[in-house]
Each structure stands twice: as C-alpha cells, then as structure tokens.
Length: 149
Image (tube, rainbow, N blue to C red; front, side):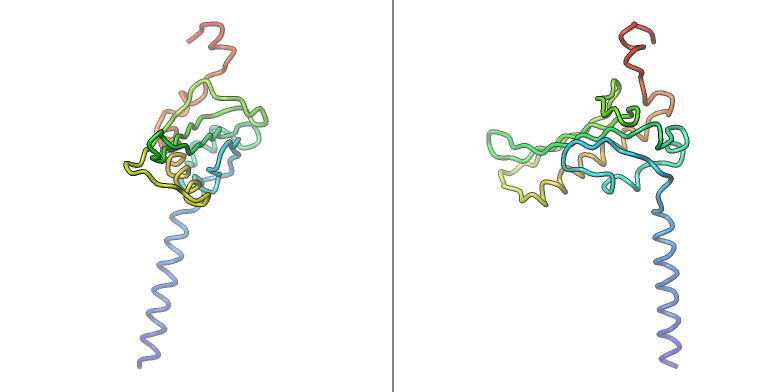
C-alpha cells in the first residue's frame, strides 16, 4: 500500500512540474541586442506571444542595456534600458523603457551578484516594455528626425 501511495505522490509531483514548466514556456522566438551583464535568458519568460508575432525575430531585436555601478558611498546601483530595434543594427532605440535600483547599504558585489542585480533591473525594464501598446514600442529615427508624430 505504501508503494502505491508513493507512486501516486510521484505522479502528482510530475504532473505539477509539467504544468509549471508549461506555464513558463517561451511565447515565441525573439532576438536581443545585449549590452552589459543581463542576457536574454534573464527575460525570456517576460516576452509575450503578441510581441513575438508583432516583432518577428528575423527582423527585430529587443535592445537590452544593463549596468551596475557604485555611488560615491559604495552603494550598488543598477540601471537598465529596453526597447525595440531593427535586428542587426544594435541601434539605441528612440523610445526606451528603463529601470533603476539602488541598494541602501554600502557593499561590494561579486561579478555573479552584479549580473543578478543587473538582471533584476533588466527584467523591470522589459516588463515596462511589454506593458506598452505594440504599435507604440518602436519609433523610426527617420520619422523622429523629420518631426512627424
């Protein structure tokens, strides 16, 4: 009897794990133009299906800039910028979405901790990007220079 209960428990655990993985499945393929410690793996679960359909990976990239610096008092500060840019250009987006965080205490971070801290900021910037209307995410620099809306 005990073996049967263990099998049922393992089966429930396997089903729960499969559901968890399925709920975090990537919406679709996308590319990134990365500058700094944050990477595509840090934001993959935030990119929506609607985004990947509107901005196909073969023509568009998510611009992702991240940085970790220190204040003069030694407090870690991270900053991230996300936006949409034509693939392969790595051009800074005209319309961007940002995030920044500063820790209250003076401390030194290892390279791994700096990367994790940058990922937190990058995730917030991408959340800001994904919360906007798809048609509002990209502004063509030529249009901007010409003064057109």
